[in-house]
Amino acid sequence: MATTQIPLNLGTLPAFRNETYADFTSPDSRRSMRQALDAVRAQSGREYELWLAGARLKTEEKLVSRNPSRPSEIVGVHQKATPAMAGMAVESAFSYFPEWSRTNAQDRVRMLLGAAGILRARKLEFDAWLVQEAGKTWIEAEADVCEAIDFCDYYAREMLRFDDPKPMLHMPGERDELVYLPLGAGVIVAPWNFPLAILAGMTTAALVAGNTVVVKPSSETPTIAAKFAEVLLEAGFPDRSFSMLTGSGSTVGDTLVQHPKTRFVCFTGSREVGLRINELASKTQPGQIWIKRVIAEMGGKDAIIVDSEADLDSAVAGVLASAYGYQGQKCSACSRAIVDRQVYDEFLDRLKAKVDSLKVGPADDPDNYMGPVISDGARRTIQNYIDIGKKEGRLVAGCGPVGGDGYFIKPVVIADVEPKARIFQEEIFGPVLAVTPARDFDHALELANDSEFGLTGAVFSKNRDKLRKARDRFFVGNLYFNRKCTGAMVGAHPFGGFNMSGTDSKAGGPDYLLQFLQAKSIAEKLS
Ligand code: NAP
Image 1: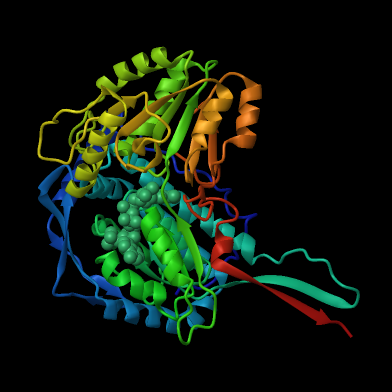
Image 2 (image 1 turned 120 degrees about the vertical axis):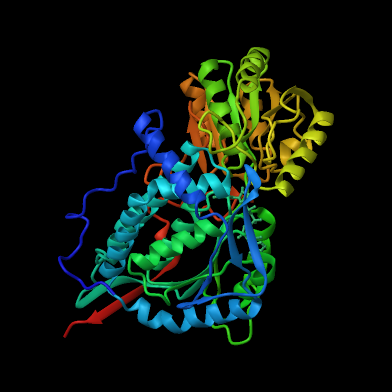
């Protein structure tokens, strides 16, 4: 464990800055990225052990991860944790918690800054893993890795802030303090769509706050999780501070969530799984002595309003990037464009021209704007929604085959969609955009809010009164004006949604760490 040298504080540490993205238009960066892809491909098919409470284990059943751009390519072979292993992981996290929670916060912060440094040094390698295992294009992969680095750098500084004495009112004759303590052993359940950034953000926030964790990565992206576990260990996080349990969520999830020694669950994923976790965690188990805390970030059905007074070219660019970046597989993706009828036809014409020109193909070719969707199952689900959408509206762009054996889907635009249509209400999680006309701005706001979700949204308008109205009435956790509704940046756009989108945890913001802490008030009567 690292020892304290020069005390760290927010005054001496450089202020937080977002990690700069690589410029893949430069020939040098392109060459380096190709080399990183070759190096990662050379490890194809390698078997990874599961990391359980300081030991590397193998199981009989294996989880095979494939490259969604070329499914015959095996990225990694992983272990499938059993419910018994899940129970052992929670027990171990619980028994190691007293020791880890008593480490100096400064030591934990140093480890986290170290993890940021290791990720930074291995950035292109991680980019390449994201291209290979998650089907991210180069720039989307780079954004994911930079966000992971940002989370580490940001939460390290946040921990220093929470570790500082809080200025309290002192009662006459008393010294009054407020200190923050970690919660205990937690469970982290991560999705595949930001397989590094979200996994790293949730895990490191919990760890730096002094909690121990059992991490359950997505079955689609176990190799990236295994690589991140290497980073944590190299950065000095003790081998019992976390377990990395690869395997099926439906097999180990209930055991992890229901275990009486689980103190909190931090989840990002679908509405269905999030609600199940919330329900199971709320039921007190024999021997359980706390109310489990659930931090859950879930789905979205995000809308962009294009007003009659919008700059149409920038609205088209914003909708395009938000709807089709990473193949629409972002919780923040725009899946509804709500367009004032005065500019509806013009907007659709310009959008169609752009969508028709988007290139789809293997994610390792930087000329492709869109790569594959994550799996064959996802492709089938999305295709089913496209078939439904063709009946619910008018197909304007997309459909038809894409060459290659990857899980490719062309970007789809379906116009004239009614608010009660399934493709207007249900999360599709693919490159499918529903476009709906609005009578005026008030109607557009009403349509945008007609959703059980409330994650992100954007408004394109030059009229400040309308923007002011949207500020008050557009009910989403992350609202953007005259820009895309994806691409939240750590430190600038704390991220989390309303309603069925989650508990509004605001990842990458000043309130986030508080969810992994509990406050203790201490009052001492002075003689
Ligand atoms: P998912 O199917 O809900 O899976 C998320 C995680 O939950 C995976 O690790 C999964 O493991 C695990 N899981 C499955 N069943 C479980 C159970 N019964 N108990 C405990 N864990 C269980 O979601 P996904 O397909 O990975 O991700 C896409 C969804 O995430 C979309 O809805 C998207 O909107 C949402 N998302 C939200 C945010 C946000 O910040 N709001 C960010 C990113 C993504 P397996 O992989 O082994 O099944």
